[in-house]
Image 1 (cartoon, helix red, strand yellow):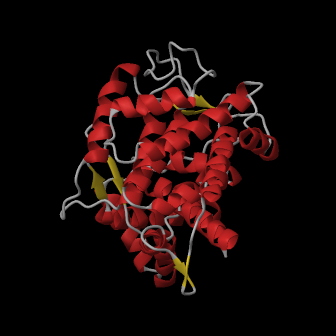
Image 2 (spheres, helix red, strand yellow):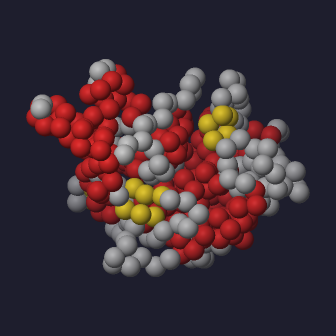
Length: 346
């Protein structure tokens, strides 16, 4: 990403009233803005859709008003997190509930998977997730190494092997509650031989870590102070393990995506944060009965849209920690991975 997206403006109460007056004068424009809101268009995306600054500001005020009314709070004490249900997310979650758990059928045909299918999927996920974090290898070379059991020759190949072993391990951990120790265990497997032993499977002890573009040096994210990490991880585990009540239900796939975001945001480790975050997402949704995720290498989809992945993080952080951007991005990736699987087995 060459430059950061523009941060959205913040509004006071009176500005909402002025926005409503502007939109009331043009019902057609109001319908367009309502459509933008249903699609959850970000502020930086409005620039080329609504060139006029005043109309754009009025549109954003209207969109924010609608979103605020729909916000669902996320019970996480350290951060003021929220998200909105959208027509797209509701429709997709219904599809995932139908097709990613239970008995899967396509055109009245029950799907059956053999062991080789899951091994292939775990390999694909491990390779793509490692390449996302900078592993310099090709899919073909990495897959041949894993299939033949060839000893890794460099750090990039070791990253792939580690990721594969971590993905296999989380399948064995799916009946365990999420604990800091489980997260540290996954990280230790993920960084074996690629990170100093004193740092692998341990929370960071410094604050000189930022998420930045390796070429331009542009800083995308400054993680919380390292002293906050243990408490935030404890809270993350409580959030993951909490039973969902009727009054505050968070769909399991949404909750898994939020866990993915939180580990990326907290950045608890010196290295391997992204890979660990994606592994914990898999652990969570599989532990909640969405077993078909075992056959869906979602990182392969993320790799195709790395810029959008970064933007989903940034838009969430910029827009008052509205997780909807990150949730919608991941839902689209899951949908694409599901379609890839159906095409593969169909």
